[in-house]
Image (cartoon, rainbow, N blue to C red; front, side, top):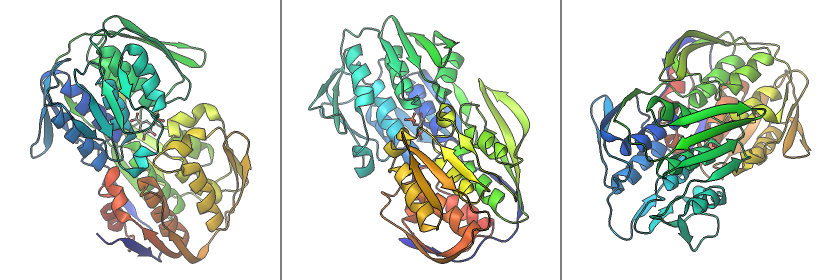
Length: 441
Ligand code: S3P
């Protein structure tokens, strides 16, 4: 693959149906949960991106057999205490925060010290958020500075914990739930809402899990040590990947797109709620329930006259991976948009809030910082780009690369975008799919 791509044409009107690859969060959860089930689990449409392949590599290093067949993936689970490995094991999660964090929750019963590490971007990210609860369960962390690499040693005397999660992080919540699964007794979590795929999978697998909503919190109780059977899963398309094509269509001229079988779990659809409040008319068709999740086709048309929005912090977790796209839409909408409480955005694969400011300013859009990690965007519906734009040094953040491609193919300008290989993290066929719709680069 080339190291830099050039784009200097907007996309022509299109009317197409597409499929998007499997959901990343569900794919990673499938591999992890299947590894601790008893027997053979099968997933169809498992995402084959680097984040998922790194999860698979780590789980294989823990002695679990995983095979790719022609159109499915097979995991030979070995039960709750079933990982087998030699002294000095190193697990490399690559770029994936979900893998490093969730997997650490599965290691709290390890007999030997395991090193968990990752790439340059992942080594900068906060791990204190999972170290603290896992220590309370009884795991020990050597040479701990709150970042990767972690050196985890489990305990034979794990005890259940009471834990409060205030970041609205599904990764923290899921790490604690997985640790709870390996711990005798009942672990109690009080957390701000976030994507709930782990809860739905626990329920589907009959792991004793109680969930209640009280005011702004989810209260979750997990009774540990419950063995569960192997299972099959058809992974739906990923709404976070679909979002790039949703915004592409919305901002292109006279275009229409149907995206088939996407997971529309309400804890993930913040982008649709926000875009529809800005004047888009995105529809869910053929809604179907599947193992506690909801999947549907998504229909989207180009839309002129989008209007500004004020997004409260409360719904941030439902759109956490989509804010760069939302900033771009705000940039061409009428009026001043505000987004609040986006501290977590600077803790992703790159500092995405800072990048939001940088990219919009590069495009000539006025922005202002507001207290507590907020951004004010002065929209310009007449925005047309005709200068040279270059995007580089973004820590190969896949979502910054794809956002830049969407900006270039909808707003014009002469773009040089570095690191096209970054798409392999979450959406390996992004470039070929957008080219099929008519993008030229
Ligand atoms: C994920 C949760 C989110 C999201 C990430 C995937 C998950 O992170 O940004 O891409 O699969 O649980 P946080 O839960 O840390 O916000």
